[in-house]
Image (cartoon, rainbow, N blue to C red; front, side, top):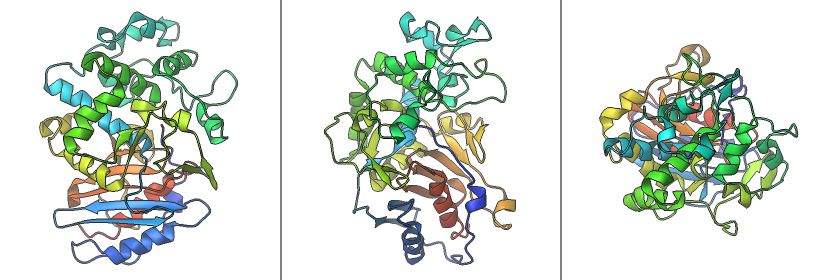
Length: 368
């Protein structure tokens, strides 16, 4: 599921209160969280902050303690961990052509740009970095003039498979030739393809892969890939003031945005990702090849970077964040400069930039 940052810079509120000490000011965090609940856009939110000294979790609004919620495209960070684990075990290379792992039925007419077929030139790295140029089956318009996102936001719940998502994308126009320098286009189609590649290598379905390779490994008890449309555990995502009851769709996203978790268990994964649990830490710098997707977000290889210039924060330096976020307002980011991790959600699809406003407010209370 794609994230969109709309007018985020112009909506930032600059706080005058700064923390002089390195400890988390829990009272201020609670104040910021409570103020985020406006009963118009944000009805519930949650945050977990962690640094070497302490960890703090707080829920506001209609979020209960350890509330399970959809983390949306933050799921993609879990896929990145799996791909890099396979690379560290010699099972694949990021430079491998995807034709090595996918059947001809999937590859046929997958990427035809300006009359030339580039389907067999696509690599795993292209998919991870969103430099494939493939259209987005989720947010690009279909033949009926509506995107799948728009249909879902209108309450039209529906099921689809990886194969159907890819088939839908084949009816849309690619954006550019794979690997075009300086070009990136965020497309959920990339991660539907990665899901099929993972299933082929592991010889298991994607639900089992996540469970065995990540969830069980980390001892997570409230995290899983949503697959049962009768499952009522995760709180519904909001679109404006309406709760979206779309279990069919949420069970269809799979590797591009279907994980359910809590902020505390998301924190366990986030720390594992950046600290060598799944793949050597030496891989991390290789992922930092940035392309703009929507200011101020940039996409690297399998993760994002959020970087604001001082000109937008009244001269105050804001630590750079590395990680991922999702359309639901969920996020999982690490700020190496201050060695602090952030996981949370505002649980709202209509204006996902709201989660970044909250993050910036939190960051501005921290004195590096």
